[in-house]
Image (cartoon, rainbow, N blue to C red; front, side, top):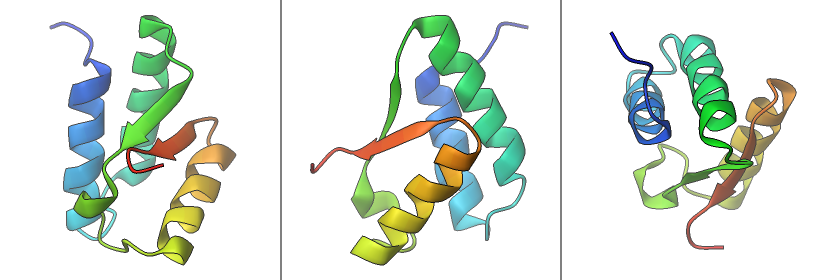
Length: 77
């Protein structure tokens, strides 16, 4: 079985966010590994797909991911 790509890991995170953050830490770890493998420095998320698509929700998400070693930016920025 091959390692998930950044796109696949990002989709897993969207699914986790829709499922009330189920297994979010495992998905963040998978995303971090995929970013490292592909040589990408930041994960890019579409804010329209987030449960909390407001400034405070996006900042909370960035802070949570940053604590786990993943830099996040949003596609509208």
